[in-house]
Length: 112
Length: 116
Image (cartoon, rainbow over all chains, first blue to last red; front, top):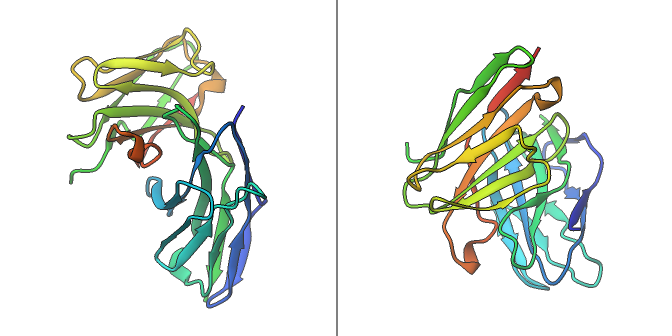
């Protein structure tokens, strides 16, 4: 079945540091890939998406590129802020499925 | 506020009792999903509706669980004879139908269930 593997957390960075959160997937066919974010006390929100190979999703300074050859969708940001502290989830939708398959999440804490 | 709402936000119940949760999706969204999230894990799919039709159920949805969306608007999720293993956050999400929208789901704040 489909699965998503994220790097283990928690991740703690200083403000303005570079962020990478690794995500790899296993899926049938050609999935669409997503990053969702959960800020403290809030519901999950879509951060960015990519629907085909080599697509780059971007939003709020975050980027992720759909790499079919390595089955990866790593999340990056060049300079994190304290307000980026949240839990980040990598997810996919595969084939005719309508539901999301999520990774286990990565807790990010950014210190001032 | 036109986001997805869920009620109650918290529910504490004793083992063996029945509980019901409600989800009100974004009004123009015709797809509605239920997920379950346990501590330190990502959400796991339970079931989804397109309009009033329940189109898919996960193997996680045992026969103690039932979900309805009677008029294609709000949805309820009922758990009968609750067990301690049912303790989790229950998330509702909604989306538009259409191939390009798959995965673009809007989540509610969740209902946290604690079974004692």
